[in-house]
Image (cartoon, rainbow, N blue to C red; front, side, top):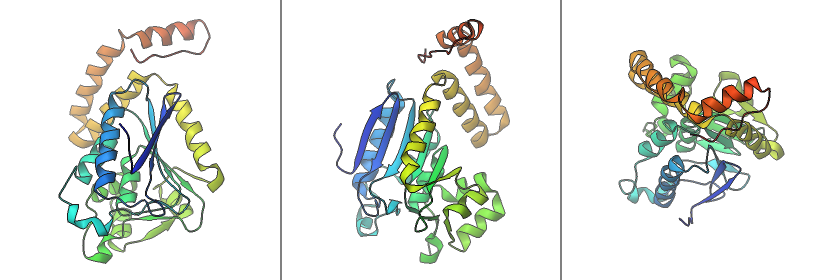
Length: 255
């Protein structure tokens, strides 16, 4: 599929989705439609094992909802539907936060499994919606406390705090802060290592963990058990054990 609001490229099992509406990369109907389409297709693609999401330009990762497109807010895929597809994916998503990530931009980063952020002092991350008399609508109210704990999430959301990269790292909102020039290199290197991990086992961990966090430990354990039954007879398990015995690097195929 051709896109006009995002850029999608794949190399060595790592796919990069670039939100392409600089300088702010705000989300309009076109972005929602194309992002959901891309995420849906990548979930089924054997050529993709890891996904990086970033923004075009150097100013913004994503400024959230495009307020000039509010007339289309009820059209196309809902923001929650897209964020759920990312957070519940069986493939790891990495947010390469190259500039400010506010509102829906922060929620996009929260939906990803890992977050790397530029050290650019102008880059800020947060959920400022309460300043407008509304609340984060794409999962931020639910995902931030799961990541940071209830009181810290409440502080950030209720006071509409915008955190710098060092502040975000200190509270655990991002996993790593990188020099601006090295951000994508760092994200791609991290993704490349992840892409070499056994795809089925990675999917099993993500699936079981997501279900356990969403539906409770018993449901999570049930999913874990189902996956173990599949994994022990997989080609990847045979390859992993054989490579271990032969003292070589395993080459996993996702089967």
